[in-house]
Length: 518
Image (tube, rainbow, N blue to C red; front, side):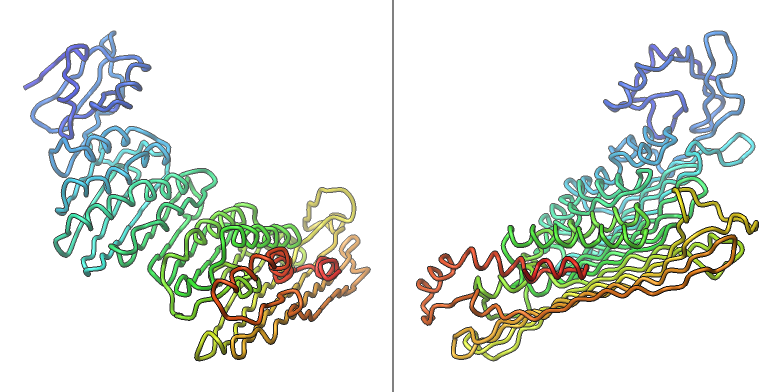
């Protein structure tokens, strides 16, 4: 049987998961707006009883597409997720294919918690898969474990020939749990939208803000491919003690672990902002000095800010409160480990052992000892290291190294920079008896000069600076242990506390460290 109907008379609700066309429309607000802006075919012809087998004819009676497309759905459904999949599946860019889909999947938990599976694929009449995505692909898995122990697994795939969504839960969810999962909808969509960009970006703040009273952990794994490039792979783990991120792509990889299990070392919003700003400046300086990949550095900086947001609410492994003088000697940030590693690149065909490389790492660790608040010690150590190598021209800005010796005019620089800041404070019988700061920074550059392939210079240039500061006087303390009087003392010393906090921040440049000590 052949059914021909005018599109002008077609009920948009009939264009459901069972009957779709590349030029058709789905009854959604966005799609109706798009359809109004495009030329409308004069008729849709459905051949036989094959669900989804549609050909579109122009007003002149010619085929709008040279090849018949058969669209196959796993289930015949008109739910919100299926309708959005039908709309997005027509798009070629990854950002449009994933637009709103992650949020729609999680928002579905507001009204139900059952398992769900849907997919749409396209093939020619000959059975060959068809692609409208221009080689862009994304495979995403979101695992959510509730505090009661229920595991929910959500997979979302955008492939060359279609879209797929699957939800599996190994137990019944309470209303609170469904609400908490749905609360991740915007954060999940933000993460997908960022990764679908070219170049990709990280937008994880919404994910990190999950309800950690109802949900025990959240894990996101995704691999995004844009064209022929190596996929960008992201693995994010969130729980009450750890926020861990690993990213890898063609340019390299980055890693960040934030320990949220010690909330007492978290400082005020102003302290955290000052420490984050100082840290980002360190990252920029390392990237500039070592020629780090701009995309990886940008992704890392975004992740560092986002995963250090509101970490104080996560939990604590200590019971002793810290006062304002303690916090002045600490960065105010959660402890962390971080690294950025660029993929080494051999850029000189005559000397393949000379590679352009960038390896940067940083960390902060804090320990609190003592049996009581009156007798305790606090130590916080910040460290950073950069090792890098790169080629640069002798003159000008252009470097074109080939197998021709005449092109072999360049400097080859190898960098090894190390910095550390260690703060120590000690209390005896409630009195601050020691507050010291040990800092050091060293930069070593090994420079080799080549002229027409011949080595003409080879020199090493070390620069270093270290200092030990006694901050006890700066943190002048009232003898009393009274809570009220102690608070007044803290307020009176606020300018000194701000100054002390500025001093304890890590300086990776010997020159900057020298200037900070004066």
